[in-house]
Image 1 (cartoon, rainbow, N blue to C red):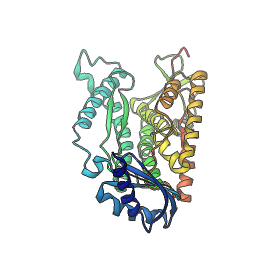
Image 2 (tube, rainbow, N blue to C red; image 1 turned 60 degrees about the vertical axis):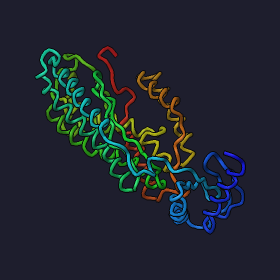
Image 3 (cartoon, rainbow, N blue to C red; image 1 turned 30 degrees about the vertical axis):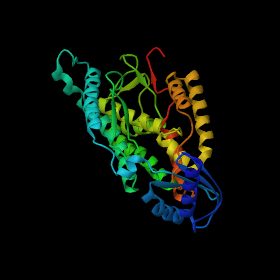
Image 4 (tube, rainbow, N blue to C red; image 1 turned 120 degrees about the horizontal axis):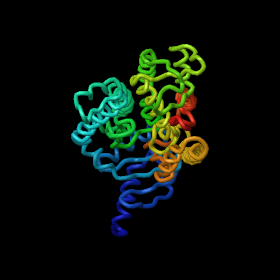
Length: 359
């Protein structure tokens, strides 16, 4: 792009800001521009006016602060108004149904490879787990759609070993309007998934057995505070020398707790990362860095699996993309909910989620 063409874009965009933002200086950056000056209207009003002016020309405003506005090209998918066909999501979901059925059947002591009809033994686990994961992602999906954010259907990730799945995720295909909508989209998934995981766990616990602690094989599970409280409420005190052999439905509920805890970690594009940025803005990067350090410490001291999550956090980085209106802070009610999300994380996480009998 030549100098005169860059100047022309800058002057054109500056004119679109007139009456809303008093431009003191500006700098063309790629196909957009950065403007510094004084905001002349409330951030919400300014954003609505600027979107109305700029989007017909293929640009979107980003209110970084009351002294700075970025004007960037609108993402192509947002201009087209679509998010593509859902065939990849459908195929991945079908594959995940089979892998969770397979893992669930193995957990029941049958051999689905030798006799495929025994896959039905995995239905309680598969149905319970995928329902929790699915409701979690649909919480994000419908909240995003409510705010006019274009979003894909959930992508389920199959895994033939372990839990039968590596979870699910959705992709936001257009910018989030402000911190309030970012917060609501972020917290909707964990709350929706937990809304189902709690009754699933309670039902599963009623179907579980109390057995001698040294009389069964397999992997022992950690006991988060919420899990411990629900177990005591459902089964009462467990006698000394005895343990609870979880029914597959209860195991799915436990995994639902674990997945919710992971998502609430204030890291990057995790749900907790959305919540943290909505609350703290750019300062959330410091919280994300501290969280990664804590995970590394937990991995060295308690459970090596936390080292993987610390590694992922450092690899992906700690920055979070800002919403279009990065000026308007959260209201007191959402700030209180953010504190509740932190307390929920503490009630769902455990230093040692999985342990072998020899641990």
